[in-house]
Length: 321
Image (cartoon, rainbow, N blue to C red; front, side):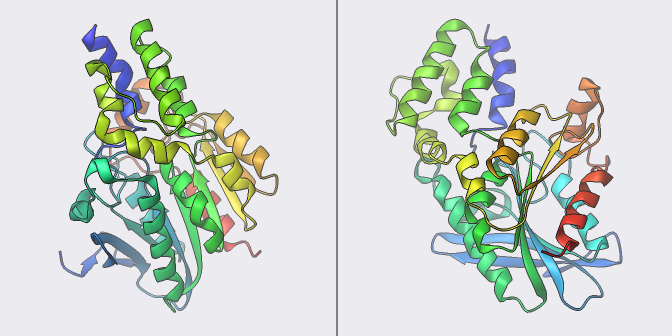
């Protein structure tokens, strides 16, 4: 029983929180990567700016990674696919700069904390606001575009009004508690019922006591305050309030976010552009309908990201308002 529950909850972990030299020559000699640091009251947050070697004034993209301990490159303890790093390189080839960063408590930004029990969703939001301010003051950049992937889509949605354009990649169309409820529906009845009771309580802003030990990986006491702060944000309401150009991108082979989510976001903001990438999965790779290849791609950094994804982003960025 424990083994089957672990298998069921593995995908949920992809949605729930877990808590060099300045200039690096890139493999492609046409661009360089420069370290950048965001100073905060609780510690430094570290990022990477990817730039073409030759440019005048160009657009810059702020890339926000997804949920869990996912770093600036799109990797975490469960996967290494380099999807976000590949995206940065591909954009640089199109004369578009980018900044990607390790969220507080993750990767090189581990010391920025805070402890898991003190972390709130708003901390991530405030950090992204600060990054946008940094980029807007940089005279090298003609415009600032926010790209949010997965959970990063929600974070980006909240702050994108301060940017010039916004791009959601594999962004959820419903609040996080609804998504978790859908993911946990296949649990054994006793665990499912308690999961739903926990979600109901957290949605009301009330911590839940006496969690079944088998559910601790998702609902442990230390993560509940974060989930309470996370559940209050509704992506449909947020994207509706954006009055800048918006692009919504969704892959048809995504195991974690469905086409319905993209449709919900597009319906909430009819002015937004919706691009569907055939056979692209959650980590931005083309896998078709091969479920084995889909899972393997999560740990295959040699597999390139979808060319259609890059084209969609580049065309949107370069399109004049």
